[in-house]
Amino acid sequence: MNSFLTIHPEVQEALDNNKPVVALESTIISHGMPYPKNVETALAVEDVVRANGAVPATIAIFNGKCHVGLTNEQLEYFGKAKDVWKVSLRDMPYVISQNLYGATTVAATMRIADMAGIKIFVTGGIGGVHRGAQTSMDISADLTEMAQTSVAVVSAGVKSILDIGLTLEYLETKGIPVITYGQDEFPSFYSRISGFNSPLRLDTAAEIAALLNTKWKLGLSGSVLIANPVTAEQEIATDEMEIHILQALNAAKEKKISGKEVTPFILKYIAEHTKGESLETNIALIKHNAKVGAAIAVAFTNPEVSQ
Ligand code: PSU
Ligand code: MN
Image 1: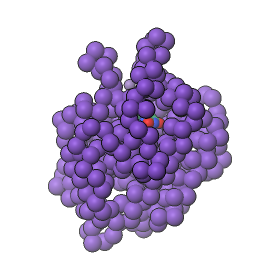
Image 2: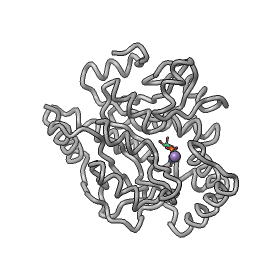
Image 3: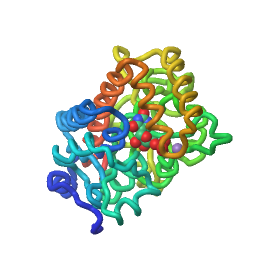
Image 4: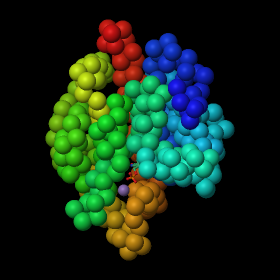
């Protein structure tokens, strides 16, 4: 155990007794959704994890400590405060050594979950290879982290603000299995389709848990991406989203947005220009991911799988 880590007693108790635990990120709270929907969603997602038999562990950096499992007051803080850092791997030593407050991205959340011994992590959408990465070199540290850290990630696929084809190529290069839950096509966050076949498909949480166990027992370190399609009732058509995405990308270019600001800028732009429809879909799909992630965590801690 390292001195930078503060594990909530409920999470520690679950880990000590091999009970299912699901890690959750905090960038989505501080930089991915407006207040108060962000806090309501974070609490609702924790409830969904509990209702499906696992213990939620939302991860963030609070006063220089990596907290695994937040109190409701801390969740409120991350939803409201304006000076919260967006922390990916490269920001961790700065924010921690300066005793600052940081919302963790997929990459940083995975790393802290791994330090705590958590194997399953649920998010909305991962970062990936951006459109135009051929010249911008904008590739999220989420992908390099997934190549090395053995924590499974449940997401609703990859958002089409990114280049989905290049992201899938990158995942293949890095040896990261990509499994779509229950359908052949890889989903694109707001939509159940993307135009790309999923490299792999599995239809039950038990099979996914068995794959995770097999991968890691083989000594193949690194993540597995589990893409969980948004439900048909909540999805937004890809051509409808494409219009907003192109406008958002244009606005980012005009304003010369770069580096870590790119993803939050585009997400905010799209939420504002779809009159909240995208936000509602976003909330629905994270809850749906939490349900599937909890089921995988439950299956993974089953003695028949984990021995
Ligand atoms: N994609 C989303 N919602 C999000 C993010 C990505 O649909 O909230 C956040 C996640 O925390 C992800 C991060 O890890 O953005 C990626 O940022 P970047 O592209 O700067 O690596
Ligand atoms: Mn980037």
